[in-house]
Amino acid sequence: MAGSSSTFVAALTAAAFATVGFLAFQASANVPADLTEPQASASSTTTRAPRDTRNPTALPGRSGTGARVVYSVDDDRVWLVTEDGRSTHTFQVTPGSVDPLPGTYAVTSRSGAVTGTDGTPIEHVVRFTSVKGVSIGFSAAVDGSAPVVDPIRKTGGIRASRADANALWKFATIGQRVVVIR
Image (cartoon, rainbow, N blue to C red; front, side):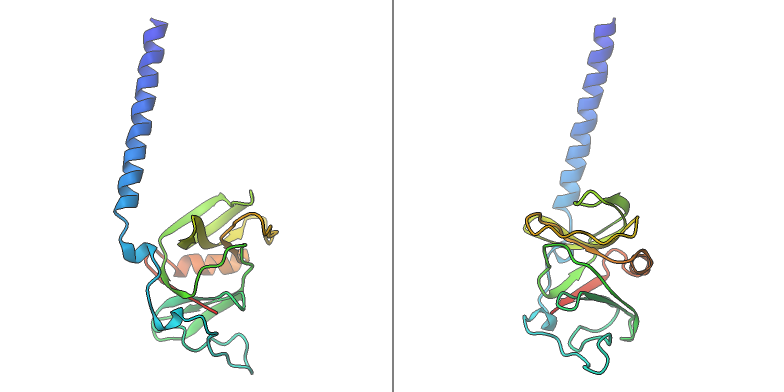
């Protein structure tokens, strides 16, 4: 009798894994292309966006219109911008070893709490693209630490303080535009 019970449990487990695998495949196959690929835009140039030299934290020119998250890979800074073009929050970040290309993206997934690729518990994860299989997104370390960037290890986490990541988490829901500039 014990042999048939273990066979039954093994069969149920295999069926569960097959179902989850099938559903994961369907979900990945049905993601709209405009949520996974960078969109061509005026901001996708490789030239540096214009800056206000008197106010280095001012929203750079040519960073798009409407509600959006603006991320400068050159300045390691993020701006949260409302529909009317006002920056309501800006903050410094610490990037991983892989930068996204300049362009316009959309938030594709979010996680409340996970473990980062560097092994650190992180929260308020907001992902918007991937580069050669490396997920790129914003987050905060639960312990408040900044990442130690290892140039050999490919990481796409863009770390913010817990307070700043919380503000971004509230602002950047699925589909929210993310504009990456130089």
